[in-house]
Image 1 (cartoon, rainbow, N blue to C red):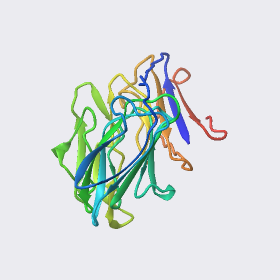
Image 2: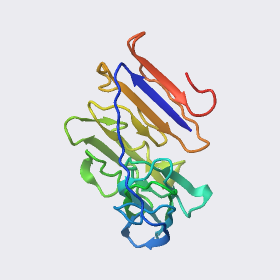
Image 3: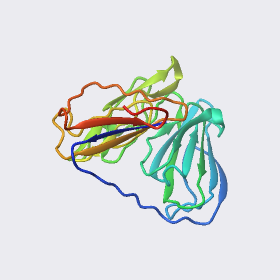
Length: 274
């Protein structure tokens, strides 16, 4: 399901993605083990092949988990997909499906196996992806990662249960969108199943707005909030959920110029235009 949230007050902003040409068709399968390593799509960084069907299975020893950190990511949006599995590549272990040109946040498995499956279609391809993996003790949440333009406080390699990671601006002219403080906690009372309590925040320029959002939760705000937004702004946020999931949008504050500035919310399933 996809929900789009659009805000405007009389101007249009456009963005353009550049795609690369594809290489020859290729099937591939890799089994990775060891304390750390690097994996990348075939042909990276010159473009992955059409009809690609490639899997990577990363194995760790018992009492360990696997952290995956993407260094580069570019797939033809909605047509070429990288599926990440928390375990072997089976339907019941699907963790997330990645596509497009946004760098995904780090992923940490709950067990000792993490798998990836890349499928591309018959036509356009892009640069592909490259990621580093690292085996971590099962009592850690892993590094929340160094997102573009942002520095995790302390730059720790891993965070222990109960520890916190603070994300702050590293470049003037950018602001934080999301939660600035993350806490490593146990899921469902199980100390061996740890995760960060909120999705990693994103970096956005002061004069930019909109974007594509994924994850279990997040925050959307107008530019410069809680200060006044600019005149002549046009912002669209697209929220993506896994098939079968629903999206709840809860407003914490709402002030727009009555009769002139509008917020429109639309959904892709059923009668969902408000």
